[in-house]
Image (cartoon, rainbow, N blue to C red; front, top):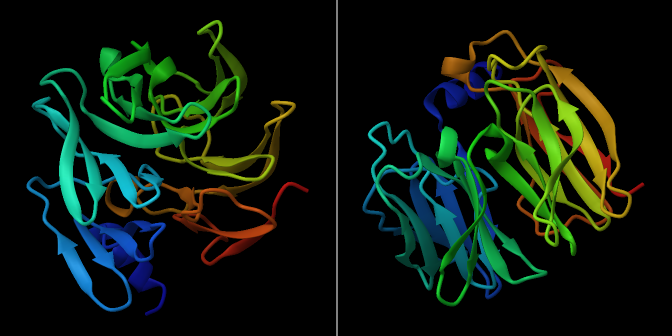
Length: 286
């Protein structure tokens, strides 16, 4: 019976996508298509006009304010909203015009330049990395145009940022974007897209995902460590995808906790992997 419950949750998408603690206390909880606020005294649902999910790990938190975008099928390529949530009030801070993107993968806050970075997909010019200041929210497109710039996970450095691609039809890569030159360099080729990452004191944990895309060769999900100083990448461990169909029972992936930065130890969990059904303890920056 215990082994059936996780499968049913995967099938029905009956899952927590984000649990974000805010500075003044309390949590915003993203469960399925719904958003709640909880402060140990009350549970209040936030009214949302349209049905969408905020991608896991794709919510930026600055103090008590959250920023996230609409992740949904959007086959008709209608307009796509980016939201600001503060004091339990939801508002649109930017709307991508009809036909410009399919959906928002993630919104991320860069502490170095105090800007928001919005990553979108999926095809052609829909794949973008767009920078917004947090005052006027004017968009500045840094990268766009093909699967080289289709991304979900991003990590900021003083001189630039690194990101893993979410490519379907070409080899995925882990890349570095230089602020001064605006050039992208490939740090490592990967067998699978990168959905999730987690900053540490001195670097970044990130992992590939098994989704069975045309460009993916094997059935492994691999955990990596990126060093901020040397920009080197080290493989930590890998696991095989389980036998269940990805269409109904989701991809094989590793999940990280919603912390701004990890220090000594952390626990990661997974879905759809052989031999990884609970929590894995990791020592950080060793």
